[in-house]
Image (tube, rainbow, N blue to C red; front, side, top):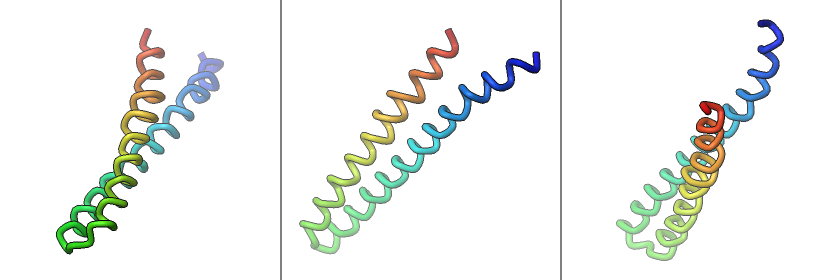
Length: 80
């Protein structure tokens, strides 16, 4: 049984890193979208649109690219 620990660690570390990266990107996307709404309310349309675009890219990368593409696919593959 002790020989299974390195294989488990080798599987778990990348999954943990991808999960952390997805969380950071998603949080950054949410922060950019919130800042976009604040700038829009202040009448700064160009800044608001720029932040909205950046937020959308970060949310896409965090939720779909890393979260769904890497983390969820690895979890589903390891459960089979």
